[in-house]
Amino acid sequence: MTELNESPAPSSPGRRRTAARLAAVQALYQIDLTDATARGVVSEFKRHRLDGKGEDEIFGKADQALFTELVDGITTRIADLDAQIVTALTTEWTIDRLEIILRAILRAGTYELMVSLDVPARVAISEYMEIAHSFYAGKEPGLVNGVLDRLAKTLRASSLPEETGGRRGAGPR
Image (cartoon, rainbow, N blue to C red; front, top):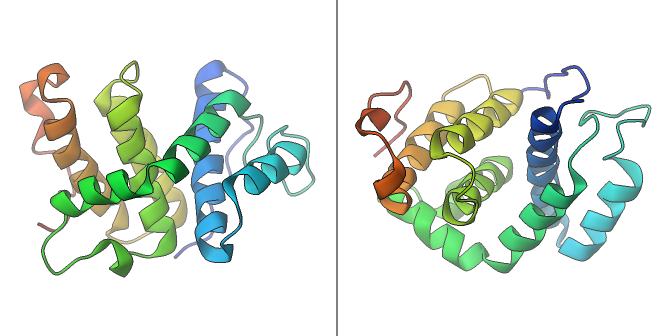
């Protein structure tokens, strides 16, 4: 895993949504690693990390409503999300075999593909690929792309253009 890339603090609505997605992945990581409650982690992030003013701030100003929706929604639907993710992995890869941060990224991306129908599938995939690039320098972003692309073809089949295949880094299958 590489260190998180730093970027300028988001200020536009789109950048605040990107910051919320990144923060949600971090919150999911914390929840998975520490067995903390979603409510407690959401509260902590809102108090200390999402306003863009902290000394060690990495998120910038985030869309707190989207952040809360993502963390709450993902943590209440983990079994459904994991079942979807498993369908896009090869048989030798299980959800538990994935690194915690990679699992958090895939859960968040899958959740948005399932629930956030106002967000185009390509945008959701791109956002979570960029988040993966923030943590990994290896093949993991390609895995994120491949898994989310496969899931988008299933979950959003009627709204995807035909050219969804063939993007770089299709990931293991």
